[in-house]
Length: 153
Image 1 (tube, rainbow, N blue to C red):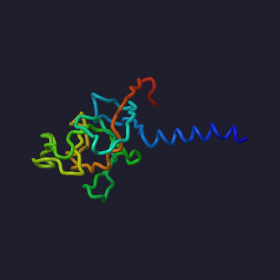
Image 2: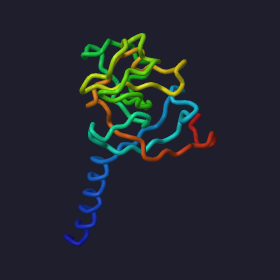
Image 3: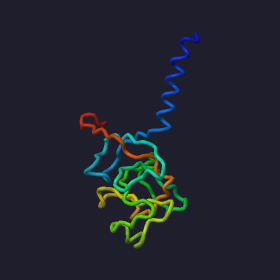
C-alpha cells in the first residue's frame, strides 16, 4: 500500500511545484491581436517585480470593482485574468498611448503600464490607469496557437 502512495505523493508534489511557478491562461477576445488570437494558450512564469521588462507579454489580474482602481464593468467576470503587453515599468516614461489617462512623466514605483497590442479593442492602462505590479501574475514563456478546428462551438 505504501509503495502505491509514494508515486501519487510525488506526482501531487510535482503538480503543486508547477502551479507555484507557472500560470496557464487562454486568450479571450481580440485585445492582443495580431500577436495572439482568441483560443491561444499562454504558459507564463511567475516572476518577481524586479525581473519585469517592457515589451513582455504578461498575465495580469483584473481589478476588482471598488478596489483602488477605477471601477469597471467587465464583460466577462468569470475570467479574472487579462493578457496584455507590459508597456512600461517603474521609472520608465509613460508611453505616449497612455498619456491621455496617466499624464506625462515616469511610471511610479510599484506600478506598471499595460497595453493591448490591438489598441482599438483593448481595455488596459488607458482606461484603468496604472496596474499595481503585484497584480502581474506571470510573464509569457510559451504560447500555443489553437487551430479553428480545435475551438469549441
